[in-house]
Image (tube, rainbow, N blue to C red; front, side, top):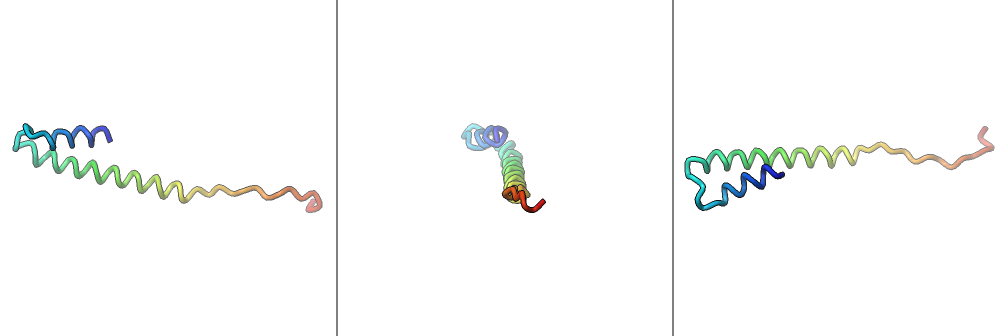
Length: 62
């Protein structure tokens, strides 16, 4: 995210050389997609948490 912020600052800078703007804009979009994919992966990983609650102890079951 720090890289995204840094590239975004350069893109927003009015003194950014026009020759750099296209490549920086492409890179910013790539970074944005990578961040989105990582967030989605983490969200799915959290949903797939197969934690099982223990049942109450029943001594008569033995």
